[in-house]
Amino acid sequence: MKLHEYQSKDLLAKYGVPVPEGEVADNADDARAIAEKLGGNVVVKAQVLMGGRGKAGGVKLFTNANDAATFAKELIGKRLVSIQNPDGMVVEKILVGKTIDIAQEYYLSVLLDRNAQKNIVMISKEGGMEIEQVAEEHPDAIVKLEVDPAWGLCDFEVRDAVKQARIPKEAANQMVSMIKKLVKAFIEEDADMIEINPVALTPEGKLIAADAKVSIDENALFRHKEFDETSSDSAENAIEAEAMRRGIAYVNLGGEIGIMANGAGLTMQSLDEINAAGGKPANFLDVGGGAKADRVKSCVELIMMDPNVKGLLINIFGGITRVDEVAKGVLEAFDQLDVQLPVVARIEGTAVEEGRKILEGSRIIPAATVEEAAKKIVELAYA
Ligand code: GDP
Ligand code: MN
Image 1 (cartoon, rainbow, N blue to C red):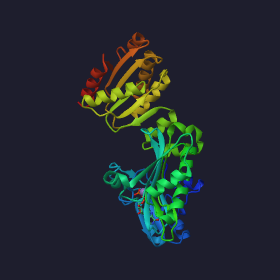
Image 2: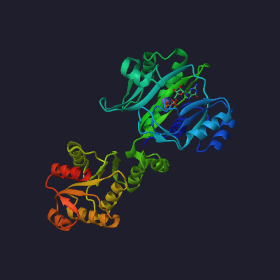
Image 3: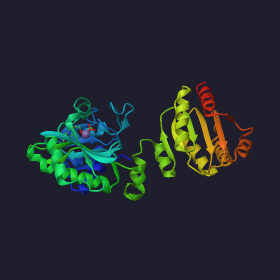
Image 4: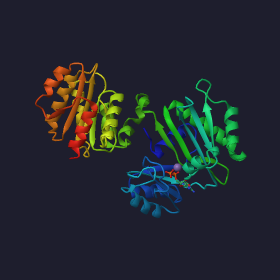
């Protein structure tokens, strides 16, 4: 789960990482008041969960509170579009921060490297808005430091990595200290990504986090009740937020064919078959093992919340899950929601005979295989 920049900075500040003074606002008046309090030299930053805000026009520097407020007014409610996020996101909140004088911009991140099977720290002297280009064209300019899961980081390793990254002497000690704090925060907060880009070096020789992106491992959210409210307002999609509240594994994929399957593997297969049949999946949804009619109904409801959905594919292989429970849930949901869309179901496994009987005479079209089901639903939905 991605945290906003202002939340990320608050979190890092708890670990002693230097961050600029600043406050979040959702209207121009508050933005003006914060800017005045900070002395007028402020940077106004869109709080949207996407990269490349600078290039998208979501970050601007000001020398007085009035101009900052005018820009805030313009920015709030606007949709920002970036290369990383062509669909864009609407700005609801802005961060008004004290402007830092920046002499140099460095890059620092901590993330899990699945190949190394370790957390790694990435350090670069070439920070700033072109870091993607640096990664592509000069990968050597990014130094990687593996964190040993048993021993953690030793001082000398961190020093060595900072030296390899050619961070200038006057900033090296502060960089070492910042890295250790980031790794501590990463582990204690169950983060799966922390990125500071840029780490700013001021003309006075101070290192400070000018930007911050933290993402928390969603599987660990039960340990972090402090993010409960965030989890719903920062989910990329309102349906995903609702799914999270219902404890259902749902990811919106933007297509037109709703998918309800059990088990991640079978769900992935359903997505593949829909794609192979020339359709676009609207979602990933795993009803989970042993789902009863209630849960199935709740899943159908979720899928139908997506206005893009033109048809539904049901792909259930009953193991612990009984197919008749699924059939009951689906029909109940259709009744209540008055579903008029085409629905094709491939059901197999435990209690399949009872399940088929329940579906007989309903609007659900049976299919013998997943491939056949995918072809049928694509044909009907896009007709
Ligand atoms: P991003 O584009 O979404 O990563 O947003 P950033 O917070 O990194 O801001 C984009 C760029 O704006 C940074 O790379 C900096 O060059 C610049 N910037 C952001 N905050 C400040 C600041 O306080 N002072 C100065 N001088 N530049 C800033
Ligand atoms: Mn940045």
